Structures are given as structure tokens and as C-alpha cells.
Image (cartoon, rainbow, N blue to C red; front, side):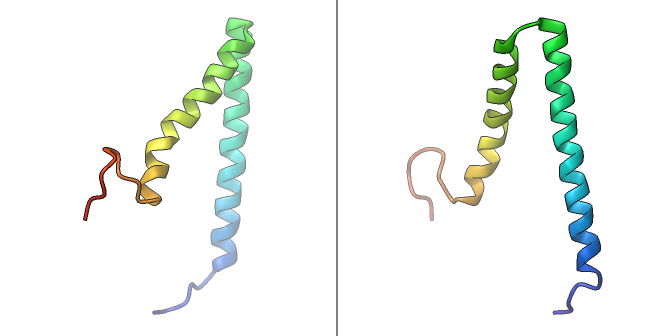
Length: 71
């Protein structure tokens, strides 16, 4: 297998992407706070983001969704 040609460019791109996603999430929180004037709406946004990511995370840990081990 051939080694990556420019691994630092890849890591820099991933880092920039993660910073952009973080800034977007902070901006989204500020917009929701400005519209609703409610901290409860902000906490619901955080809970929703975790609930959305949870099904994709369980796939990597090989956790069956129905409670049975699947071969």
C-alpha cells in the first residue's frame, strides 16, 4: 500500500473543517437564543445534536439495536 503523499494537508483540512463546524454550532445556538430568549431551547438543541449522532456512533461499536448478537 502506498503511503499518503501529503498527510499534513489532510490533517490541516480536517482541522479547519472541525473549527468551521464548531463556529457554525455556536452561531446556531446564538440564533436560537436570539429568537426564543430561552436557555431551555439551547439545551434542547444540544440534546438533539447528541440524539442525532447516537445511531451513527453505535454502528462503530458493533452494538446491535435489537439487543441480540447478530453474526
